[in-house]
Image (cartoon, rainbow, N blue to C red):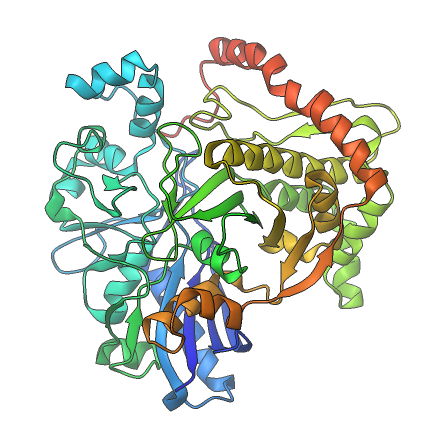
Length: 520
Protein backbone atom coordinates (compact mmCIF):
# COMPACT_ATOMS: atom_id res chain seq x y z
CA UNK A 1 0.00 0.00 0.00
CA UNK A 2 2.43 2.62 -1.24
CA UNK A 3 0.25 5.04 -3.20
CA UNK A 4 -1.79 8.06 -2.16
CA UNK A 5 -4.86 9.54 -3.81
CA UNK A 6 -4.91 13.34 -3.70
CA UNK A 7 -8.06 15.24 -4.64
CA UNK A 8 -7.42 18.84 -5.69
CA UNK A 9 -10.54 20.99 -6.12
CA UNK A 10 -9.32 24.18 -7.76
CA UNK A 11 -11.16 27.15 -9.17
CA UNK A 12 -11.43 25.82 -12.72
CA UNK A 13 -11.18 22.06 -12.36
CA UNK A 14 -11.18 19.10 -9.99
CA UNK A 15 -8.24 16.72 -10.31
CA UNK A 16 -7.78 13.22 -8.92
CA UNK A 17 -4.07 12.47 -8.63
CA UNK A 18 -2.29 9.26 -7.71
CA UNK A 19 1.22 9.67 -6.25
CA UNK A 20 3.81 7.15 -5.16
CA UNK A 21 6.08 7.67 -2.16
CA UNK A 22 8.78 9.22 -4.35
CA UNK A 23 6.42 12.00 -5.39
CA UNK A 24 5.92 10.63 -8.88
CA UNK A 25 2.53 11.37 -10.42
CA UNK A 26 1.43 7.91 -11.56
CA UNK A 27 -1.84 8.93 -13.18
CA UNK A 28 -4.41 11.71 -13.04
CA UNK A 29 -7.90 12.64 -14.14
CA UNK A 30 -9.20 16.17 -14.59
CA UNK A 31 -12.80 17.37 -14.74
CA UNK A 32 -13.29 21.04 -15.73
CA UNK A 33 -15.84 23.09 -13.78
CA UNK A 34 -17.32 26.52 -14.29
CA UNK A 35 -15.61 28.77 -11.74
CA UNK A 36 -18.85 30.54 -10.87
CA UNK A 37 -22.06 32.09 -12.09
CA UNK A 38 -23.01 35.69 -11.36
CA UNK A 39 -26.59 36.82 -10.79
CA UNK A 40 -25.51 40.37 -9.93
CA UNK A 41 -22.42 42.46 -10.75
CA UNK A 42 -19.52 41.39 -8.59
CA UNK A 43 -21.15 38.19 -7.33
CA UNK A 44 -19.50 34.79 -7.74
CA UNK A 45 -21.49 31.72 -6.74
CA UNK A 46 -21.63 28.03 -7.58
CA UNK A 47 -23.91 25.16 -6.68
CA UNK A 48 -22.07 22.99 -4.11
CA UNK A 49 -23.20 19.86 -5.95
CA UNK A 50 -20.98 20.91 -8.88
CA UNK A 51 -17.88 20.36 -6.72
CA UNK A 52 -18.97 16.98 -5.38
CA UNK A 53 -20.16 15.70 -8.76
CA UNK A 54 -16.86 16.72 -10.37
CA UNK A 55 -14.96 15.01 -7.54
CA UNK A 56 -16.89 11.80 -8.16
CA UNK A 57 -16.32 11.94 -11.92
CA UNK A 58 -12.61 12.68 -11.55
CA UNK A 59 -12.11 9.72 -9.21
CA UNK A 60 -14.11 7.37 -11.41
CA UNK A 61 -12.10 8.42 -14.47
CA UNK A 62 -8.87 7.90 -12.53
CA UNK A 63 -9.68 4.27 -11.73
CA UNK A 64 -10.42 3.60 -15.41
CA UNK A 65 -6.88 4.58 -16.45
CA UNK A 66 -4.88 3.75 -13.32
CA UNK A 67 -2.17 1.08 -13.63
CA UNK A 68 -2.30 0.77 -9.84
CA UNK A 69 -4.91 -1.47 -8.18
CA UNK A 70 -7.12 0.15 -5.57
CA UNK A 71 -5.71 -2.23 -2.95
CA UNK A 72 -2.33 -0.49 -3.30
CA UNK A 73 -3.77 2.90 -2.25
CA UNK A 74 -3.03 3.63 1.41
CA UNK A 75 -5.15 6.74 1.90
CA UNK A 76 -6.74 9.89 0.56
CA UNK A 77 -5.93 13.59 1.04
CA UNK A 78 -7.98 16.61 0.03
CA UNK A 79 -6.96 20.13 -0.93
CA UNK A 80 -9.28 22.84 -2.25
CA UNK A 81 -9.56 26.47 -3.26
CA UNK A 82 -9.63 28.78 -0.26
CA UNK A 83 -12.40 30.93 1.14
CA UNK A 84 -15.40 29.36 -0.67
CA UNK A 85 -18.20 29.03 1.92
CA UNK A 86 -21.32 26.87 2.11
CA UNK A 87 -24.43 26.93 4.34
CA UNK A 88 -25.65 23.46 5.31
CA UNK A 89 -29.04 22.70 6.80
CA UNK A 90 -29.68 20.05 9.46
CA UNK A 91 -30.31 17.51 6.70
CA UNK A 92 -26.77 18.04 5.42
CA UNK A 93 -27.94 19.73 2.24
CA UNK A 94 -26.88 23.21 1.04
CA UNK A 95 -29.36 26.01 1.73
CA UNK A 96 -28.06 28.31 -0.99
CA UNK A 97 -25.28 28.41 -3.62
CA UNK A 98 -21.72 28.54 -2.34
CA UNK A 99 -20.14 31.98 -2.25
CA UNK A 100 -16.90 31.56 -4.18
CA UNK A 101 -13.68 33.22 -3.08
CA UNK A 102 -13.79 35.51 -6.15
CA UNK A 103 -17.05 37.10 -4.93
CA UNK A 104 -16.81 40.87 -4.43
CA UNK A 105 -20.01 41.72 -2.56
CA UNK A 106 -19.65 43.80 0.57
CA UNK A 107 -21.81 44.54 3.59
CA UNK A 108 -21.62 48.23 4.44
CA UNK A 109 -22.93 49.96 7.56
CA UNK A 110 -22.18 47.19 10.06
CA UNK A 111 -21.72 48.28 13.69
CA UNK A 112 -18.00 48.66 14.42
CA UNK A 113 -16.19 46.46 16.91
CA UNK A 114 -16.77 48.08 20.29
CA UNK A 115 -15.49 47.96 23.85
CA UNK A 116 -11.81 47.74 24.66
CA UNK A 117 -11.07 46.11 21.31
CA UNK A 118 -12.67 48.99 19.45
CA UNK A 119 -10.70 51.51 21.51
CA UNK A 120 -7.47 49.63 20.89
CA UNK A 121 -8.08 49.57 17.13
CA UNK A 122 -8.77 53.31 17.10
CA UNK A 123 -5.57 54.03 19.05
CA UNK A 124 -3.41 52.09 16.59
CA UNK A 125 -5.37 53.37 13.57
CA UNK A 126 -6.58 49.93 12.54
CA UNK A 127 -10.33 50.62 12.68
CA UNK A 128 -10.58 50.92 8.89
CA UNK A 129 -8.81 47.59 8.46
CA UNK A 130 -11.23 45.86 10.84
CA UNK A 131 -14.21 47.51 9.11
CA UNK A 132 -12.87 46.23 5.79
CA UNK A 133 -12.71 42.69 7.18
CA UNK A 134 -16.28 42.99 8.46
CA UNK A 135 -17.54 44.23 5.09
CA UNK A 136 -15.79 41.41 3.23
CA UNK A 137 -17.08 38.59 5.46
CA UNK A 138 -19.55 36.41 3.58
CA UNK A 139 -21.28 35.40 6.81
CA UNK A 140 -22.09 39.04 7.55
CA UNK A 141 -23.68 39.45 4.12
CA UNK A 142 -25.84 36.34 4.49
CA UNK A 143 -26.89 37.26 8.03
CA UNK A 144 -27.82 40.80 6.88
CA UNK A 145 -29.48 40.09 3.52
CA UNK A 146 -30.72 36.51 3.92
CA UNK A 147 -31.56 36.18 7.62
CA UNK A 148 -33.89 33.23 6.99
CA UNK A 149 -31.00 31.27 5.41
CA UNK A 150 -28.71 32.21 8.28
CA UNK A 151 -31.29 31.10 10.84
CA UNK A 152 -31.68 27.70 9.14
CA UNK A 153 -27.92 27.19 8.79
CA UNK A 154 -26.79 24.19 10.83
CA UNK A 155 -23.14 24.42 9.75
CA UNK A 156 -21.30 27.26 8.00
CA UNK A 157 -18.23 25.68 6.49
CA UNK A 158 -15.62 25.91 3.78
CA UNK A 159 -15.59 23.87 0.57
CA UNK A 160 -12.95 21.60 2.11
CA UNK A 161 -15.29 20.82 5.01
CA UNK A 162 -18.20 20.22 2.63
CA UNK A 163 -16.23 17.66 0.60
CA UNK A 164 -14.90 16.09 3.82
CA UNK A 165 -18.51 15.63 4.94
CA UNK A 166 -19.40 13.95 1.64
CA UNK A 167 -16.39 11.64 1.83
CA UNK A 168 -16.56 10.67 5.52
CA UNK A 169 -19.95 11.74 6.88
CA UNK A 170 -18.14 13.82 9.50
CA UNK A 171 -18.69 17.57 9.89
CA UNK A 172 -15.03 18.46 10.26
CA UNK A 173 -12.24 20.23 8.43
CA UNK A 174 -8.48 20.59 8.52
CA UNK A 175 -6.84 23.40 10.45
CA UNK A 176 -4.72 23.90 7.35
CA UNK A 177 -7.77 24.90 5.30
CA UNK A 178 -8.90 27.77 7.54
CA UNK A 179 -8.25 30.78 5.35
CA UNK A 180 -11.47 32.77 5.50
CA UNK A 181 -13.47 35.45 7.29
CA UNK A 182 -14.34 33.24 10.26
CA UNK A 183 -13.49 33.66 13.99
CA UNK A 184 -10.36 31.52 13.75
CA UNK A 185 -7.30 32.02 15.98
CA UNK A 186 -4.44 32.01 13.47
CA UNK A 187 -1.85 31.79 16.24
CA UNK A 188 -3.32 28.94 18.27
CA UNK A 189 -4.78 27.17 15.20
CA UNK A 190 -8.22 26.71 16.73
CA UNK A 191 -11.49 28.59 16.91
CA UNK A 192 -11.03 31.92 18.67
CA UNK A 193 -11.59 32.33 22.40
CA UNK A 194 -14.94 33.85 23.43
CA UNK A 195 -13.25 37.17 24.30
CA UNK A 196 -11.64 37.55 20.85
CA UNK A 197 -12.71 40.58 18.76
CA UNK A 198 -13.41 38.32 15.76
CA UNK A 199 -16.70 37.18 17.32
CA UNK A 200 -17.82 40.81 17.26
CA UNK A 201 -16.57 41.37 13.72
CA UNK A 202 -18.23 38.21 12.37
CA UNK A 203 -21.04 37.26 14.79
CA UNK A 204 -21.72 33.55 14.49
CA UNK A 205 -23.01 30.88 16.83
CA UNK A 206 -20.00 28.61 17.61
CA UNK A 207 -22.32 25.63 17.12
CA UNK A 208 -22.46 26.49 13.41
CA UNK A 209 -18.73 25.77 13.06
CA UNK A 210 -17.24 22.33 12.42
CA UNK A 211 -14.61 20.32 14.31
CA UNK A 212 -11.00 21.11 13.39
CA UNK A 213 -8.29 18.51 12.85
CA UNK A 214 -4.55 19.33 12.44
CA UNK A 215 -2.85 18.45 9.14
CA UNK A 216 -1.45 14.91 8.88
CA UNK A 217 -4.09 13.46 11.21
CA UNK A 218 -6.82 11.12 10.07
CA UNK A 219 -10.05 13.08 9.78
CA UNK A 220 -12.31 10.11 8.96
CA UNK A 221 -12.85 7.08 6.74
CA UNK A 222 -14.48 6.90 3.32
CA UNK A 223 -18.11 5.86 3.76
CA UNK A 224 -19.87 3.17 1.70
CA UNK A 225 -21.97 5.93 0.10
CA UNK A 226 -18.84 7.85 -0.93
CA UNK A 227 -17.31 4.58 -2.15
CA UNK A 228 -20.25 3.99 -4.46
CA UNK A 229 -20.09 7.58 -5.81
CA UNK A 230 -16.31 7.88 -6.25
CA UNK A 231 -14.97 4.35 -6.46
CA UNK A 232 -12.64 5.06 -3.52
CA UNK A 233 -12.58 1.92 -1.32
CA UNK A 234 -14.80 2.19 1.74
CA UNK A 235 -12.89 2.49 5.00
CA UNK A 236 -9.85 4.12 3.39
CA UNK A 237 -8.56 6.89 5.71
CA UNK A 238 -8.94 10.53 4.72
CA UNK A 239 -5.93 12.43 6.10
CA UNK A 240 -6.28 16.13 6.86
CA UNK A 241 -4.17 18.22 4.46
CA UNK A 242 -4.49 21.98 3.85
CA UNK A 243 -5.71 24.65 1.44
CA UNK A 244 -4.27 24.70 -2.07
CA UNK A 245 -1.67 27.43 -1.50
CA UNK A 246 -0.38 25.82 1.71
CA UNK A 247 -0.10 22.47 -0.06
CA UNK A 248 1.69 24.14 -2.98
CA UNK A 249 4.34 25.42 -0.58
CA UNK A 250 5.38 22.01 0.78
CA UNK A 251 4.73 20.36 -2.59
CA UNK A 252 7.36 22.75 -3.98
CA UNK A 253 9.84 21.70 -1.29
CA UNK A 254 9.66 24.97 0.67
CA UNK A 255 10.03 23.60 4.17
CA UNK A 256 12.61 26.12 5.45
CA UNK A 257 12.05 29.90 5.85
CA UNK A 258 14.95 30.81 3.54
CA UNK A 259 13.17 29.22 0.55
CA UNK A 260 10.50 31.44 -1.00
CA UNK A 261 7.56 29.89 -2.81
CA UNK A 262 5.97 31.93 -5.59
CA UNK A 263 2.63 30.83 -6.98
CA UNK A 264 1.74 32.27 -10.35
CA UNK A 265 -1.91 31.36 -10.11
CA UNK A 266 -5.20 33.25 -10.34
CA UNK A 267 -4.01 34.88 -7.14
CA UNK A 268 -0.24 35.36 -7.24
CA UNK A 269 1.42 34.78 -3.87
CA UNK A 270 4.79 34.79 -2.13
CA UNK A 271 5.04 32.35 0.80
CA UNK A 272 7.61 31.25 3.34
CA UNK A 273 7.21 28.61 6.07
CA UNK A 274 7.98 29.51 9.69
CA UNK A 275 7.70 27.85 13.07
CA UNK A 276 7.04 31.22 14.77
CA UNK A 277 3.88 33.32 14.48
CA UNK A 278 4.80 36.40 12.44
CA UNK A 279 2.28 38.80 10.93
CA UNK A 280 3.51 39.81 7.44
CA UNK A 281 1.45 43.01 7.85
CA UNK A 282 0.18 44.18 11.28
CA UNK A 283 -3.19 42.57 12.08
CA UNK A 284 -2.97 40.38 8.96
CA UNK A 285 -2.05 36.91 10.26
CA UNK A 286 0.10 34.22 8.69
CA UNK A 287 -2.06 31.39 7.40
CA UNK A 288 -1.89 27.82 8.70
CA UNK A 289 0.79 25.76 7.02
CA UNK A 290 0.24 22.25 5.69
CA UNK A 291 2.69 21.28 8.45
CA UNK A 292 0.96 21.05 11.85
CA UNK A 293 1.82 23.93 14.15
CA UNK A 294 3.70 25.88 11.47
CA UNK A 295 2.78 29.16 9.76
CA UNK A 296 2.81 30.28 6.15
CA UNK A 297 3.68 33.96 5.75
CA UNK A 298 1.91 35.09 2.61
CA UNK A 299 1.85 38.19 0.48
CA UNK A 300 -0.98 38.19 -2.08
CA UNK A 301 -1.44 39.89 -5.40
CA UNK A 302 -5.15 39.23 -5.72
CA UNK A 303 -6.10 38.28 -9.29
CA UNK A 304 -2.40 38.18 -10.07
CA UNK A 305 -2.03 35.80 -12.99
CA UNK A 306 -5.65 36.48 -13.83
CA UNK A 307 -4.22 39.45 -15.72
CA UNK A 308 -2.21 37.10 -17.92
CA UNK A 309 -5.39 35.16 -18.70
CA UNK A 310 -7.10 38.46 -19.47
CA UNK A 311 -4.33 39.39 -21.90
CA UNK A 312 -4.54 36.03 -23.66
CA UNK A 313 -8.30 36.37 -24.01
CA UNK A 314 -8.26 39.99 -25.21
CA UNK A 315 -5.04 40.12 -27.25
CA UNK A 316 -3.74 36.58 -27.72
CA UNK A 317 -6.22 34.87 -30.02
CA UNK A 318 -3.57 34.49 -32.73
CA UNK A 319 -1.23 32.56 -30.42
CA UNK A 320 -4.07 30.50 -28.94
CA UNK A 321 -5.25 29.46 -32.42
CA UNK A 322 -1.73 28.69 -33.68
CA UNK A 323 -0.97 26.63 -30.58
CA UNK A 324 -4.07 24.53 -31.13
CA UNK A 325 -3.19 24.02 -34.80
CA UNK A 326 0.39 23.00 -33.97
CA UNK A 327 -0.56 20.86 -30.99
CA UNK A 328 1.66 22.79 -28.57
CA UNK A 329 1.08 24.67 -25.32
CA UNK A 330 0.10 28.36 -25.83
CA UNK A 331 2.84 29.36 -23.34
CA UNK A 332 5.46 28.43 -25.95
CA UNK A 333 4.18 31.10 -28.33
CA UNK A 334 3.61 33.66 -25.59
CA UNK A 335 7.21 33.15 -24.51
CA UNK A 336 8.19 34.14 -28.05
CA UNK A 337 6.24 37.38 -27.51
CA UNK A 338 8.29 38.08 -24.39
CA UNK A 339 11.55 37.51 -26.25
CA UNK A 340 10.61 40.17 -28.81
CA UNK A 341 10.90 42.84 -26.10
CA UNK A 342 13.96 43.85 -24.07
CA UNK A 343 14.00 43.72 -20.25
CA UNK A 344 12.10 46.70 -18.89
CA UNK A 345 9.62 46.62 -21.81
CA UNK A 346 11.12 49.76 -23.36
CA UNK A 347 9.90 51.87 -20.42
CA UNK A 348 6.44 50.37 -19.92
CA UNK A 349 5.92 49.77 -16.18
CA UNK A 350 2.87 48.08 -14.66
CA UNK A 351 1.56 47.97 -11.09
CA UNK A 352 -0.83 44.99 -10.68
CA UNK A 353 -3.20 46.30 -8.02
CA UNK A 354 -6.37 45.41 -9.91
CA UNK A 355 -8.16 44.62 -6.66
CA UNK A 356 -7.67 46.72 -3.51
CA UNK A 357 -6.28 45.17 -0.34
CA UNK A 358 -6.48 45.59 3.40
CA UNK A 359 -3.24 47.44 3.99
CA UNK A 360 -0.74 47.00 1.15
CA UNK A 361 -2.09 48.10 -1.20
CA UNK A 362 -4.77 50.03 0.65
CA UNK A 363 -8.50 49.90 0.02
CA UNK A 364 -8.22 52.84 -2.39
CA UNK A 365 -5.71 51.13 -4.69
CA UNK A 366 -6.12 50.64 -8.44
CA UNK A 367 -3.89 49.21 -11.11
CA UNK A 368 -1.64 51.41 -13.20
CA UNK A 369 0.40 51.21 -16.40
CA UNK A 370 2.78 54.10 -17.10
CA UNK A 371 5.35 54.98 -19.74
CA UNK A 372 3.28 54.34 -22.88
CA UNK A 373 4.88 55.41 -26.16
CA UNK A 374 3.95 55.01 -29.80
CA UNK A 375 6.56 52.24 -30.15
CA UNK A 376 4.84 49.93 -27.69
CA UNK A 377 3.07 46.80 -28.92
CA UNK A 378 1.01 44.06 -27.35
CA UNK A 379 4.28 42.16 -26.82
CA UNK A 380 5.48 45.05 -24.64
CA UNK A 381 2.25 44.93 -22.65
CA UNK A 382 2.55 41.18 -22.10
CA UNK A 383 6.12 41.43 -20.85
CA UNK A 384 5.22 44.43 -18.66
CA UNK A 385 2.45 42.33 -17.04
CA UNK A 386 4.92 39.60 -16.12
CA UNK A 387 7.48 42.13 -14.89
CA UNK A 388 4.90 44.04 -12.83
CA UNK A 389 3.76 40.87 -11.07
CA UNK A 390 7.35 39.94 -10.27
CA UNK A 391 8.08 43.47 -8.99
CA UNK A 392 5.03 43.30 -6.70
CA UNK A 393 6.02 39.88 -5.35
CA UNK A 394 9.58 41.01 -4.79
CA UNK A 395 8.17 43.88 -2.72
CA UNK A 396 6.26 41.26 -0.75
CA UNK A 397 9.41 39.20 -0.26
CA UNK A 398 11.23 42.20 1.19
CA UNK A 399 8.31 42.97 3.51
CA UNK A 400 8.30 39.35 4.68
CA UNK A 401 12.07 39.39 5.26
CA UNK A 402 11.80 42.60 7.29
CA UNK A 403 9.15 41.05 9.54
CA UNK A 404 10.81 37.64 9.95
CA UNK A 405 14.50 38.71 9.86
CA UNK A 406 15.21 35.67 7.68
CA UNK A 407 16.67 36.44 4.24
CA UNK A 408 15.29 34.45 1.31
CA UNK A 409 18.11 32.90 -0.71
CA UNK A 410 16.30 30.79 -3.31
CA UNK A 411 12.93 30.57 -5.03
CA UNK A 412 10.51 27.89 -6.16
CA UNK A 413 7.73 28.79 -8.61
CA UNK A 414 4.49 26.85 -9.02
CA UNK A 415 1.05 27.52 -10.50
CA UNK A 416 -0.01 27.90 -14.11
CA UNK A 417 2.52 30.63 -14.83
CA UNK A 418 5.40 28.38 -13.80
CA UNK A 419 5.13 26.65 -17.17
CA UNK A 420 6.56 29.74 -18.87
CA UNK A 421 10.36 29.74 -19.15
CA UNK A 422 10.27 33.49 -19.86
CA UNK A 423 8.29 34.16 -16.67
CA UNK A 424 10.75 32.17 -14.58
CA UNK A 425 13.82 33.81 -16.13
CA UNK A 426 12.59 37.35 -15.55
CA UNK A 427 11.57 36.32 -12.01
CA UNK A 428 15.15 35.17 -11.35
CA UNK A 429 16.44 38.44 -12.83
CA UNK A 430 14.09 40.71 -10.86
CA UNK A 431 14.63 38.91 -7.54
CA UNK A 432 18.32 38.32 -8.19
CA UNK A 433 17.94 34.77 -6.88
CA UNK A 434 18.25 31.26 -8.32
CA UNK A 435 14.75 30.17 -9.30
CA UNK A 436 13.44 26.70 -10.07
CA UNK A 437 10.19 24.99 -10.93
CA UNK A 438 9.27 21.77 -9.10
CA UNK A 439 9.45 18.43 -10.90
CA UNK A 440 5.66 18.31 -11.19
CA UNK A 441 3.06 20.90 -12.09
CA UNK A 442 0.63 19.35 -9.58
CA UNK A 443 2.26 20.81 -6.47
CA UNK A 444 -0.99 21.32 -4.53
CA UNK A 445 -1.91 17.68 -4.93
CA UNK A 446 1.64 16.62 -4.09
CA UNK A 447 1.58 18.70 -0.91
CA UNK A 448 -1.66 16.99 0.14
CA UNK A 449 -0.06 13.62 -0.61
CA UNK A 450 2.90 14.56 1.61
CA UNK A 451 0.48 15.24 4.47
CA UNK A 452 -1.07 11.83 3.93
CA UNK A 453 2.31 10.09 3.71
CA UNK A 454 3.36 11.52 7.07
CA UNK A 455 -0.04 10.98 8.66
CA UNK A 456 -0.09 7.32 7.62
CA UNK A 457 3.54 6.80 8.75
CA UNK A 458 4.64 5.98 5.22
CA UNK A 459 7.37 8.56 5.83
CA UNK A 460 8.51 9.20 9.41
CA UNK A 461 8.37 13.00 9.32
CA UNK A 462 7.93 16.02 7.05
CA UNK A 463 11.65 16.52 6.50
CA UNK A 464 11.92 12.99 5.12
CA UNK A 465 8.70 13.20 3.12
CA UNK A 466 9.66 16.49 1.48
CA UNK A 467 13.18 15.21 0.74
CA UNK A 468 11.84 11.98 -0.78
CA UNK A 469 8.80 13.32 -2.62
CA UNK A 470 9.94 16.71 -3.98
CA UNK A 471 12.79 17.70 -6.27
CA UNK A 472 13.52 20.52 -8.61
CA UNK A 473 13.00 20.56 -12.34
CA UNK A 474 14.54 23.23 -14.56
CA UNK A 475 16.50 25.96 -12.75
CA UNK A 476 17.09 29.58 -13.82
CA UNK A 477 20.02 31.73 -12.73
CA UNK A 478 19.87 35.55 -12.70
CA UNK A 479 21.39 37.30 -15.71
CA UNK A 480 23.79 39.95 -14.39
CA UNK A 481 23.17 42.51 -17.13
CA UNK A 482 19.40 42.13 -17.05
CA UNK A 483 19.51 42.20 -13.25
CA UNK A 484 21.02 45.69 -13.31
CA UNK A 485 18.24 47.05 -15.53
CA UNK A 486 15.55 45.57 -13.31
CA UNK A 487 17.22 46.82 -10.13
CA UNK A 488 17.22 50.39 -11.43
CA UNK A 489 13.57 50.13 -12.51
CA UNK A 490 12.51 48.55 -9.23
CA UNK A 491 14.31 51.02 -6.96
CA UNK A 492 13.89 54.12 -9.10
CA UNK A 493 10.39 53.69 -10.51
CA UNK A 494 8.29 50.80 -9.25
CA UNK A 495 8.77 51.35 -5.52
CA UNK A 496 7.86 55.04 -5.88
CA UNK A 497 4.80 54.43 -8.04
CA UNK A 498 2.21 53.65 -5.36
CA UNK A 499 3.22 56.58 -3.14
CA UNK A 500 2.96 58.99 -6.06
CA UNK A 501 -0.42 57.68 -7.23
CA UNK A 502 -2.07 57.05 -3.86
CA UNK A 503 -3.46 60.62 -3.54
CA UNK A 504 -4.98 60.27 -7.01
CA UNK A 505 -6.50 56.91 -6.07
CA UNK A 506 -8.07 58.57 -3.02
CA UNK A 507 -9.46 61.33 -5.21
CA UNK A 508 -10.90 58.85 -7.72
CA UNK A 509 -12.57 57.07 -4.82
CA UNK A 510 -14.08 60.35 -3.58
CA UNK A 511 -15.36 61.34 -7.02
CA UNK A 512 -16.74 57.99 -8.16
CA UNK A 513 -17.88 56.79 -4.74
CA UNK A 514 -16.15 53.44 -4.86
CA UNK A 515 -13.77 51.13 -6.61
CA UNK A 516 -15.87 48.22 -7.83
CA UNK A 517 -19.30 47.49 -9.33
CA UNK A 518 -22.19 47.53 -6.90
CA UNK A 519 -22.64 44.00 -5.59
CA UNK A 520 -24.80 44.24 -2.48
